[in-house]
Length: 233
Image (cartoon, rainbow, N blue to C red; front, top):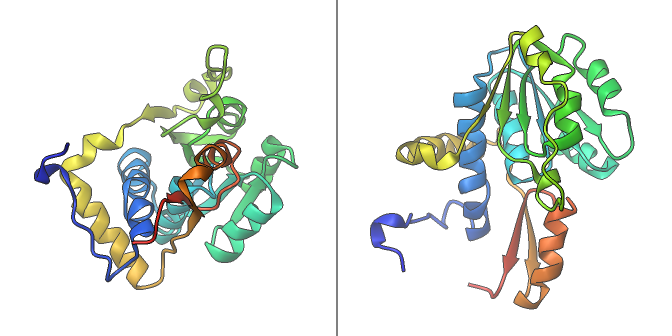
């Protein structure tokens, strides 16, 4: 049971309920503060985000573009990469399932990456650490590649790149920004209203589909926010 003060009233006249679970919910707020407060991108810099076609990553890349940065996404599969570039306006995309990530990053980020927003951890994090620009910022948001491991989580093996490049790696928890949530929602709502930021929800119907839907998340089969709809409202 939650007290009324712990709930947030949403405006369904502006956007339907699923959007308030994604771009106008915790994922969008996470992207906003993780990129702007922790990553601190500056105009003209290069921002790379993993899990780029997901609920958080897709918003990170779009906000990077709004801030005047180059946005490069890492995603699995050609369809997701086309979605990032053709629909969301990313400057480039790396298909980690079908190409050499390190080589692709060097091609797309010849001067290195100024901000890396990490949603996956593991090997992708290692490959990104190998291509940092001087004074880069690495934002640790999640490590979905490690969540189902039966062995200890794989940490970065080339963390010395942080030293060589005088870079910073910092984790964050979005709940630390609770007092500022409305700031993020005002900004994101404004970008959605003027068409500079798009939202996408992957809606699956029926409570009975829960096991398969959960696996869909961990297999990276969704575009945008994955939502399980129990019934029509």
